[in-house]
Image (cartoon, rainbow, N blue to C red):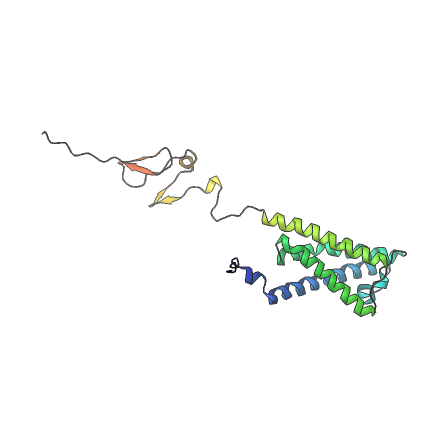
Length: 210
């Protein structure tokens, strides 16, 4: 049975190197935003510089202290901001879920390696689930909004710039609004009311008597 040919651009979209590059850029932006948010909140709230444990140690993300709730809020805001690089790098609503889950799965691996243990607190898992859901829903909405935007194929549609030139003759905007074709050429040509162009009166030769 003959195989169905791949659609145009499918191999390019599924290139492993391109996917790995997009994942690396998204993961990097995810952590850069988290570093900025957590560092700002830590300096403003406690006056202390945050350490690596505030970013990668899941034990710091607790629901029984104010610091844990603040970190959870920072991670949720981080997921919301990460929608911007997803929109710029991915721009396809069908791929948002895959990349969002990949970001959080890599975060799980990194935090587990840093703490040398798999997260066991319910609050940490709830924050990650809510973060993934927020990133996915907002990312899909943003990509669909971009996909459904009307495409402009060049040219300017403003009425003030509709005056053009045909064979060196200017076209008045009033004639374009009325749907008239422009008479380009000699004075013996007229205008078509249906906008189909110009017409020319051609004289007919006299018929000889039989």
